[in-house]
Each structure stands twice: as C-alpha cells, then as structure tokens.
Amino acid sequence: MRERCIHYWRLARLDHPVGWLLLLWPTLWALWIAGDGHPQPQIVLVFVLGVVTMRAAGCVINDYLDRDFDPHVARTRNRPLATGAVSPFEALILFAVLMTLSLGLVLTLNRETLVLAIAGGAIAVSYPLAKRFTYLPQVYLGLAFSWGIPMAFAAQDKSVGALAWSLVLANLLWTVAYDTMYAMADRPDDLKVGIKSSAILFGRFDLAINAVLQVLALVTLVLIGQYLGLNSWFYAGLAGAGATAFYQNRLCTERDRTQCLKAFLNNIWFGGFVFAGIVLAYIG
Image (tube, rainbow, N blue to C red; front, side, top):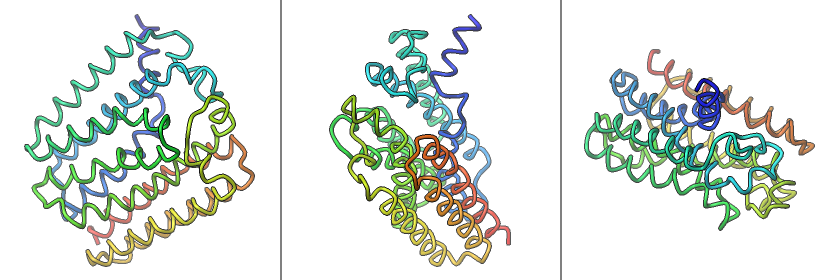
C-alpha cells in the first residue's frame, strides 16, 4: 500500500511543488489586490488548498490522456502511467477523488465563485487535448492557470471587471513565456511523436518572442500598479521579476534541454517577486 501511495503521489505531481506554485502565485496576487491588502484568511486557505488539489487533478488527467505519448518523451517516460506502475483505471479514480475534494472546497464559497470554478474545471480537464489541435496549447494553459484570478475577486464579493481581467492578461502572457521554455526542452521529442507546441511554432524566434511576452506581462503589471496607486515596493518586486526574466532568457540561449527546463523552474521566483511586491506595497 505504501508503494502504491508513492505512485499516486508522483502521478499527482505532489512531489514537484513548482507546478502548484506557478498556479498559486497569480491567485495570491488577485486575493491580495481584491482584498485591498487584507484578504479574508479563510478564503486564502480555501484557495491555497484548492490550487494544490486542482493542479494535482490536472496532472492526473493530463497523464491519463497522454499515456500513449509519454513513454516516447525523455522527460515523461518515467511517469507512473507511462511505466505501468499505475493503471488507467486507478488514475481515473484518483482524478475523481481530487475533483471531489476541489468541489468540496469551492462549495464553502459564494455562488458566483462556484460557477467560475465549474468553468475553470472544464478548462483544466480539456487542456491536455489542446496540444493535439493547436500549436498554442500554452495559451490554453495560460487561461487555465489564470482562472483563479476572477475566482479570487468573486470570492471576496468584488466585481470581476477590468482590473481582474488585466491581471488575467498579465498572467497569461507570463504563462505562455514560461511554458514555451518548458516546451523548448521537449521540442525534439514532440516533433517525433506529433505533439504541437508554441516552441515548435515560434521556431528560431522562440527567445525573442518569449522576451516580448515577459516584457508585456511586466508592462501590464506596471499599469495595474499605477491604477491602484501602489508604492515603490510593488515596482521593486517587478524589478526582481524582470531580473529573473533576463536570467531565464540567458539560460535558454543555446536551447539546451536541461537549461531550458532550469529556466522554466526559475519562474517560481518571478511570481514570488511580484507577490512580495504586492504584499509589501499594501503594508507600506
């Protein structure tokens, strides 16, 4: 039983916190902004737990749908479904359990948040199919990883208006950039098995486009900061995020698989710097 639990843990990617941190940071940005620097603690707790469970559910259904592709990709060939350590049926049961837990969490919030959560769940579940039909599945992932933003505003009885959707835009631009780095690591294998990605679409312009996306994300955040009247702490956080973006592009210069993956992982600091800037701006 202990061994099986370890396989389930790995299937849900709970041993890799990077994924849920990348989903958590923009959700926390929105919670702090929607809460004027003082979000309700119980709502924060629900969202943190919801991020972990929904991201885990997304990983499980992703591996279930990609179980015929993953054995042919160097980065994914040792995943529990790819190796046969977990059966497809077991994966579906685990997915159902995680989705039930996520639903239980969102039921503690208001109706508008519940409606948005149902839409977000549909986006998360369908995301793995995007790479079969479009060269921009990273945009779809960006939408999935941004959906906690309007939910955060709704949960605190704030209007899901231009401010919320501006945050969604900033996060979507950032997500497309970092997930393209991730796709750059897989590009040789993806070309062999027929999986589509932005890294394949961008080709030799991948670094330039990534840089533009990161700059646009930061510019959008600057405009949000000006609209909210945030102080210099916020811009210090953005400066830190900008420094990580520069570092990430340097890592990807040679398109080395290991370095591109390292650049992707470094994005937890980008999101963390932005969040730190928001928190300190409201404290200051």
